[in-house]
Image (cartoon, rainbow, N blue to C red; front, side, top):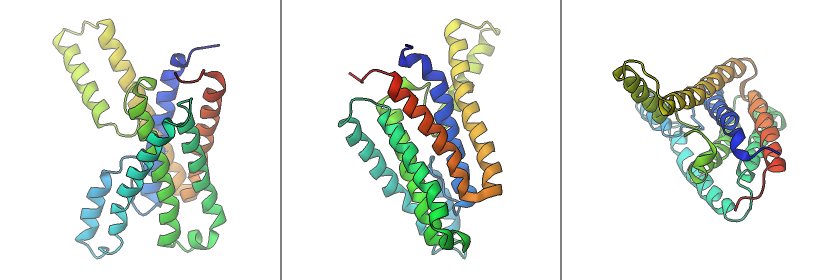
Length: 229
């Protein structure tokens, strides 16, 4: 049986893809709300607050208490269970619940009701809050942050500068760092592209794809890894 560390690259790629995908889907089809990179909602709030849509702009700010609650719940849950991948399993179940909600609430969804869409998006925000908690609590399980790419892009830029400064002499540690960051950023970008494509085709029903992918991955990791010590 392989050790959990052998899955770190694939897990990083998957989580980054899920984050980029969900962020794009909720932005495109969920009233311009970021579900993974929630600080982006500050910008949307400010832009909407000075426009005609100032009333609904307050919905952007409610993502923060939902997100904070989710991270706190993730911290609590990590202290109650013995396997760290439980957090990802719960995240996948919540994403699946959000996806099913697009079918269970057809009246709200078809009428483009703010309340119906808002409920679904907040479930996604909570789910991605758990992924953020996982990344902080178990940072050794991924190559870096998977829900926001600013830090990863910064590291790539510094690595490329060091590569240029050394006359393109690639040391092992520098090569490894560049590969890790491009792997993470590539996963996020792929998720964004797929999310944009499917959101334009089937709107919030596109949430079925990441929920099922993460459900399969987390179930596999739970069945093949030892309990966290």
